[in-house]
Length: 141
Ligand code: ZN
Image (cartoon, rainbow, N blue to C red; front, side):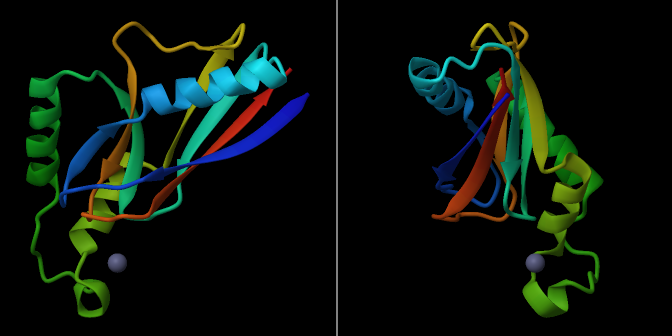
């Protein structure tokens, strides 16, 4: 078994932003393949921040706008939130609670085994931020 830890640094440019990180993960997996030969396994993609999320879905512009609209409909921006007395970003945390902090993707013969229309997204919920970290843990053999 092989376990390889890597990380991505991500900068966001607006309060809400969906960033496709599929290419970055494929590039890192290709580097790993050159050295270690990953074979079959899994990669866990985990955001280190409680006002951001990692999700898998389709990178279609209209859909991403629909998702933003739906999320804003589910979580009110202002609602006398208690956390806002400390840190004025309760709505961002609540969205992250609903969405989740990680995804795990199968790796088959050294390649990410995503569906045809699937991409991996970092979702910024409290930007802009210059220093977001996403941990990648590759486990395989
Ligand atoms: Zn907070």
